[in-house]
Length: 201
Image (cartoon, rainbow, N blue to C red; front, side, top):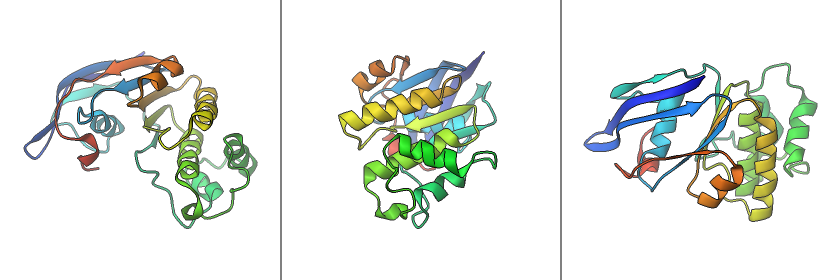
């Protein structure tokens, strides 16, 4: 099985974000999406998530259940780490499971503090756990490891790999070494269009 993006084209006003782009993503595996700034990596994820519609082209084979780590953490600022994760979980996911996952990547002492009091790296890890524990068949991750030092990144990468086995995972990264360390397929997008982080949601 596979997910196919066929002849996708997307403009924002006069600016071309993606121009006649096609790709195939294996189901049940991890793919790193790479390319220069402005090539449309984030726009591609948004199209595949269904947050925006393509001007032309089709996306085939996309699972219905999706979760995501966005470029922004998108947390509820006054909620705790545990509460932020609980918001997206099915009822069968226990409080103990949420605490265990947060503790697994070093957040065991900050479980119940409001996330606005946490550091950027801590907030990023909350966003990652939230995406992992959400009920999904595909996980979109837009530069998920930014702001993490080398040792912490290794720990979090190991956590993500362990908890996404059998799922389709698409990771946007600018770090070639990170992509190779993940041992996954790499999709290189050609330079094209405006800076992707300026594309609207």
